[in-house]
Amino acid sequence: MPIDARFIRTRVAEDLHVRLGKRWFNSGSPKLIVASTNNHTDFSIELDCYTDRRYGEYECTISVVLKWKKFAKLFRELAHWYNAKFQGTVRPGNMTFAGVNFDRIHGSPSRDLFWIANEQDVDAFTARCVDDLDGKVGDWIRRWFTWPSALDVMDAEPDLCGAWRDTAYYCLMEQVHGSGAACDWVRGIDAAGWPEWQAAQVEYLQSQVCACDGIRSPH
Image (cartoon, rainbow, N blue to C red):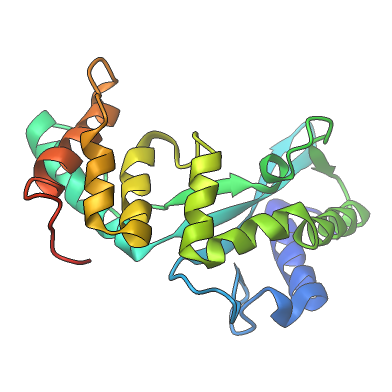
């Protein structure tokens, strides 16, 4: 059977459902949607299989994709404000909170990229993903199952969430410690000299969200 990107993604998802089943995934979806009775947050967590064809083979990775309605709502409000004030073109759609691939979570600098050329390679890739979920990657995902441990992850990984980190961090801090503490944190940021987009997020949080002593309507 010919190997292509769709075959790889479908096969990996099917095999992970079979091998890990209810321990990790929502059985009602062909997607790799993480479902657990131990998850006490409302993050939506999904595993996304990425394939890039080069030199006749496919470089494959899996990423943990975190979505959060509270953050997406605040980001939409921020995007509309930014686009109006700075004539920007930020898309205010359903913004992803964070996406982190297994290789980075695994944290081993000696770990090679995984290349797939045949079905045996697909099986080997799936086996490595199972080991990851039974190990460091699985532990990392579970840290998003409570609000305090999720904030601990944010504190430990200063580049998490990329260019929208301050907005994401505000949301999570507000969730854990309340709007007063979150606004105190925002007011302590001096964004002078920052790139426009990052500085604008701080300005929005300080002048719009926390303008009234940190009191704002709940999401």
